[in-house]
Length: 416
Image (tube, rainbow, N blue to C red; front, side, top):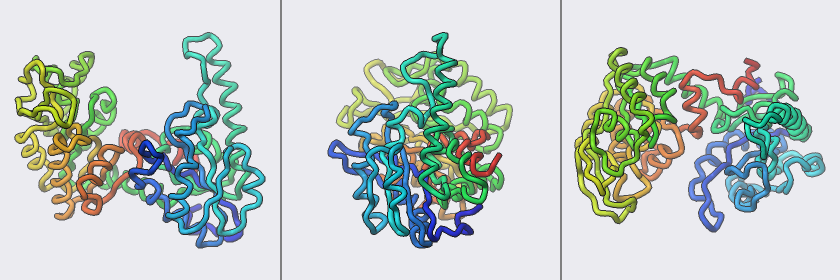
C-alpha cells in the first residue's frame, strides 16, 4: 500500500517519525529539519480526514524516564508546525483511552518510546558475557513484541516515516508492522523520498560519481568506504581520519586525533582504491590549533608534518582547492561527514569549501545527496540547503543503505 492510495478518512494512523531534534539548555529546538521533513506525511493524513498518533524517540535514555529527553518539550513546536493543537500522552504504553477518544483531524503525540527498554529490545543491566544473557535477550524480545502490539492497538494503520531509525529493528520501526496487514501499513512521503534518493545513488549512477567521507574515525566508516570504492570514480576522505592516513605513512601529526590500531586499515583502503582505479583524495595540509578551541592560535602545516603542541582541526588551503577540483564536473555526489571541527567558526573553511563546490556542481546538473547529522548541519550553517539536490534525515540508516544492507524499517513494510 502507498500513502497516496490509502483512504485515511475516519481512520486512526500511528506514524513513526524521527523527532530526535537537538535542544538547547532551555529545551528549545535548535534545528527543526526533522519536524519539517515529516510534515507532508502528517498533514496529508489530517487533510484526508484521519486522526493522527505521532510516536518518536529522543536521545538515549536507556529505558529510563528522563525529563531532559521528554517529547513534551517539543509538543508546542509540533502544534505550531501542524497549525493545530496537539494532545500529549505522558506514557506511550498507556495511551489507549486517549487514542480511542481521538476524532478525525485531532493529533496525539506519545511520550518518548525509549523510556521503555522494550522499544530497542535489548536486555538492560546484563552484559553479553553473562551466562544468563541469552535467556534475558529472549525474554526481552517477547516483551518487545507485546510493547509493539500495544502501540499497534491504538490505530487502524501504520505509517513508517522515520528514515533516521530505519536501520534499527525496534518495536516502533519494524516489529509493529507485524500487527498490520499489507493493506494497512505503508511508507510515509519522507521515507519514499529517502529510498528513492538512495536508489539514485546506487542504481542510477550518473558519472563521474564523487563521494566525500568525513568525520573523526576510519573505523566507523570502513564498511561504507570499502563499498563505495566499488562504485565511485573519486573518493575524498577528510576530517579526523586524515591523520590516521598520515600516520600510516610514518607522518608526524602532533596531537591530532588518530586511530593507531587502524593504520593497516588506512593502507588497505589506499590499496583497494588503486586496485579499483578510484582517485583517492586526501588533505595534503591542515589548519592546526594549539588547543581545542575556536579561539586557539591557528597555523597551517602539512598533514604529515604537524609539530607537537598542535592538532589538525580543519582541511588546509591546498586541501580545500583539491577537494573543490575533485568535485567540479561530478554528476553524482554523496557527502557524509565534515572536513573539520565545523562547529568552530574559525575551523569551518574546509567544510564550507566542500559545500560550495557541491552547490556549484549541483547548479551544473549533478545529483547531490547530503547525509548524516553533521553534514546536514554544515549545509544549513552555510545557507546551502536549497542549493543541493537532497538532504537525508538519516545518518546511520543512509550509510547502511548505501553499504547495501537491508533496512528493517523498510523491509517490515515491503515484506522483504
